[in-house]
Amino acid sequence: MQINDETINDETINDKIIYDVVGVGVGPFNLGLACLTQPLGELKTVFFEKKESFDWHSGIMPEWSTLQIPFIADLVSFADPVSRFSFLNYLKQKGNLYQFYIRENFFILRSEYNQYCKWASEQLDNLRFGCHIDSITLDDYTGCYRVSGVNRDNSRFAVFARNLVLGTGTTPVVPDFCLDFVGKIKLGANYIHHKDECQKTRSITVVGSGQSGAEIYYDLLMDADKYGYQLNWITQSDRFFSMDLGKLTLEFTSPDYTDHFFSLSPEKRDQIIESQGVLYKGINLSLVNDIYDLLYIKSQKENFKTRLLPSTRLESVQRSGDGLELQLTQVNTQKSFSLQTDTMILAMGYRYQLPECVKGIVSSLNTDHKGQLQLHRNYSVNNKQNVFVQNVGLHSHGISVNDLGMGCYRNSIIINKILGRDVYGVESRIAFQEFAVA
Image (cartoon, rainbow, N blue to C red; front, side):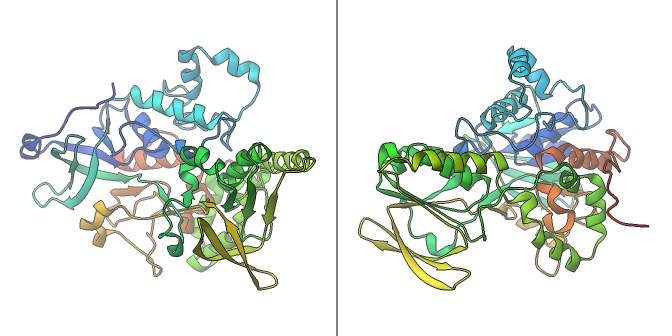
């Protein structure tokens, strides 16, 4: 069952109840880890999340939006296909399995994925929601990590961990010059909550051309003529490009390629990542085509107003009457120009930041010359190899780190490392391509 109201009091500290694994943050990756560790009787685990219940990017979920990966890349199936936490079992329990079968679409709705994860979280007894971790230190008496925080009722709690798994996720990228314009500038991550407000304005500008930016633009484009607003879409990229999802390209998220990428020098890895934006930063080709088709339809109407501006860099923002004046540069010509807009939606991607709670152990975490976390191949970040990270390591492990479909792979490696044996089989070669020649 899901634990909601229990607290861990001072008696727990005195009794030194020690967990084998303590997870900080419950997104899809740590939720998958919780599912995979639940049937392992030899592991005592607990996962903490400050939100009141599981919620994954619900602020950017137009009802039609889908995952970019097939349903089989769920929380558990690539590690344990017969797990009771699989997406197919979720459908069976909800009575929707035949409807899913008849739909004949491997790509599930993002809202449906969110509901699936909520369902899985409700089957677990090793999750604690409404708990904010604010301190992690090394306890000299136990030799373990002391993980402490605040419950929803503001009471303090603490537990001890032999191993930590940090799964606190990423935060939206916001340029410093945008921070003073709260209200006029919205985050794409909260788009759904501000959609009605935005559509009451005379003009909306979306900045960013990844999948999220494209979905926001398309969603607003549907009603642009109905509400009569000017809709602008800006990207610094040289085009609104689609992701390369060819089957041979998808092998770049394989264990084979991850091994190869990890073996390269840091300089070579940086060079490769710089050239691989089309593999993970772009838009689904089907959505690109849908946007074009909708633009064609809307262009037949007289009151339709939109601008698409590629190769355009946002330089600064200032107030202009009741709206904003954006200072922009056309990258290719280096020509500066301005654009008036009532509201702006930032969809410029996400970045990882170490959570504040780890400052007590940060000196023991390995970093490179750029200050980035330096990961071992098993996703640990310290010399003892008992602090692991989720969704981190693009610079060391390549594009697989962000891929939901590789979550089971990483979690299997983490579990096997902690237990010192192969609990879950880890594939070492699945690609037809040879990424390096012996």
